[in-house]
Image 1: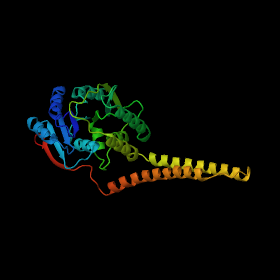
Image 2 (image 1 turned 135 degrees about the vertical axis):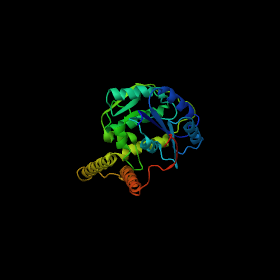
Image 3 (image 1 turned 180 degrees about the horizontal axis):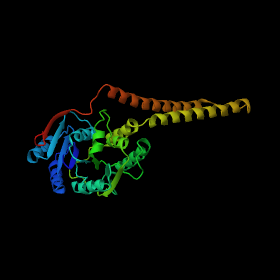
Image 4 (image 1 turned 30 degrees about the vertical axis):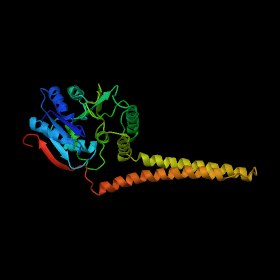
Length: 309
């Protein structure tokens, strides 16, 4: 067993891999560690770059996935190979600096935490991503019971006991932070600096960020179903009150109401509510169908490096 396993999902980051490993080597000098680079079917030369690092450094293990599995599934794939007493999960673009790993690792050990997240006072990313992170955090407070003060950073340190619990999950819709809070509440965080991307451009656009949001919303709670039920109940009560109002106007005040505008409004409101509820149910049923059908999280094509492994 080594002290620290650094698990990094790699996607279209050919230009970052060599510098990333160089910085890890400098930052973890004196520690027993391993680096597990999981290539999530990159469209560039990331896998070739990973193989070069494996050939030059026995502490580097390269995992090549057969098809794109998504960041969280790639992380779980790497965690299954991790041997460290602690595991570090971080991004591949050097916005998470390897030189902050010792501080996170030390904080986790000193406070006897199960998980230690990195918290960024200022993030070097687009404004809409900051807004999305805030919304995701607020949703996580309701869905998975995340404490308000904790920021769900992709840069974190986990004890081996927690890693062993996480990798038991085999469903196709993994969300690592959701799994963490399903296992433990002994979490903390440490303020560190968020840095500019070393090269290239980010891979998380609006669509992929929305999919992560939906995975959190529907993967760990029935809250969306309850929300749609409450919306349906509110619409029903509103329709009942409106029906009484028009009945009173018609019978008591003898005032005949032109109803076509009301009918259009009610049709739009109720129709939209029904479609929303059906969409939520469809999301749950689709996930259940794929999970029961045995869709794998990820399939490994080849593993390089790691000495005798």
